[in-house]
Amino acid sequence: MSEDPLIQRLLREGASATPFVTLGGGSFTMGSHERPDEEPVHEVTVRPFAVALTPVSNREWAQFLEATQHEPPRFGDDERFNQPGCPVVGINWFDAVAYCSWLSEVLGQDCRLPTEAEREYAARGGVPEVLFPWGNEPWSEGAHAFGAAGMDRPQPLGSSPPNGFGLYHAADNVHEWCSDWYLPDGYASADRFDPRGPADGVRRASRGGSWRHRIKVSRIAARSSLGPERRYNDYGMRVYREL
Image (cartoon, rainbow, N blue to C red; front, side):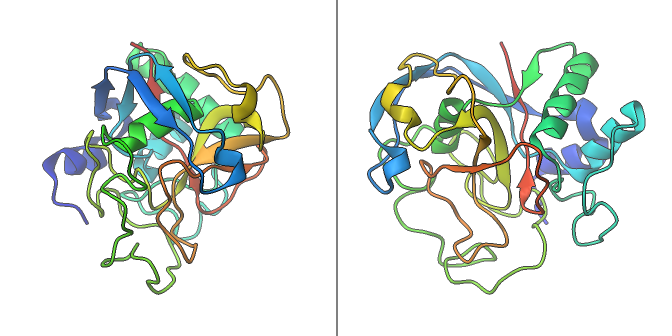
């Protein structure tokens, strides 16, 4: 468990105290040559926005459920997936959008899911031309190290180091839903300024690593996707906010 006092406060107080960091936006190189759906590599500009330091926790999600009577997450009765200090999982894209709508009312600010471009910009942490938020080599130690033994649950929030923007779990622990529809060739026709993704599709985009994969840490540019109605035990969310 992290001893970071900011993360500890988040875990104690829940949604009303969610810390955000403000990112000034700007231009960066999006995509990679590692996989066809990450090409073409292209320059993208994003507007300023704010992003939560961690994915949404089970403690935060419990506040949402109590206030709205929303359907509980899948796996919510399983002690491997319902610990207050761990990220909520078993939520689909519609659940994530509903949470953002509720939190917008709580905070009096426009909260939402990120675009893929915003998520990639945030995960990069201000470090250009690297595969991971910290450099080009995967972790060699810890629960998320390359080749580490499989886990049977997500790890506590704050249990791995933050990136250059101070964001925890930018490349590990759980996949995070994005607002965009996913298309394998979507970059070919994407806008270069504040891209919002395709107008429609079948699967929603997601980003980040997974506790249950053999390779648990995701490259910054790596894309993933899932049908928006599905609820998996390695899918969670992080809140972004308009400025």
